[in-house]
Image 1 (tube, rainbow, N blue to C red):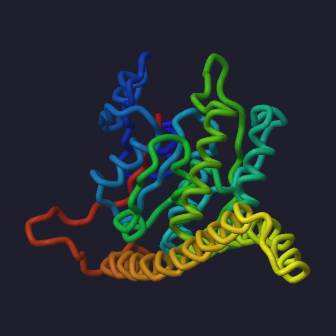
Image 2: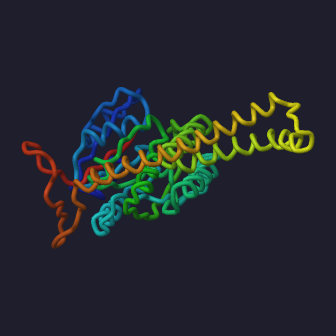
Length: 315
């Protein structure tokens, strides 16, 4: 992977993050010319979080280190980022061989992508792709809170939430080399991704989330309270007082949940404004006379000048 990336992007600095590797990954990567960094906390999300914090570059390309993605497309992806200019370019996986996806992964990817498209927007085709290029302003406005393989979901929702300009490009995707084993666990990581989608819905779409819960509670209250109201109009009494109290309490809770959703929506709006301003603090990358021009850097005095493109294979 390091050799392929050097051939595609000879001007890039290649970083390999050692995330408690137990084989000869570090030795082989260093011999191939990569810069080795260590992240003691296990998980792909922790590695991406560390890389985004440590590396400053005009463009950052991340790619899984398992040789499943076509590294030769790195040049096309970086060029597209600058020519847009875009804040993110996603490599849409195209199966180069029939067994590129493990059983269940393709269906799971389609299901999660459909869920995110429905909840957050339609500008996403392959939500779980691990082959992406980012601008500096994307990296510096992205919180990177995920710990493991749900990091791609967080990246996708971040771009959709702030409506960041994103492009997609098809890349070949093949099976892992013989003797290589994926760290992705279909069911465990699938549940983690689903949980993250629900949590991001609660955080990013509080009105929708709380309105749905309030509606369900109100429906339960109506189902419980309707017979009580009918009895009252028919007999003038409330023979099922506990049911009436329960229905009234559930309806009160539904009202509070609905109001909470509107309050959190206002807070979310202010948070998006702050994230947008952080994003705009960095200029868009652009190409001038055939070379990359990053404009004036917002970094404080004393910092090193912006670096060129960087590629960071993940463990």
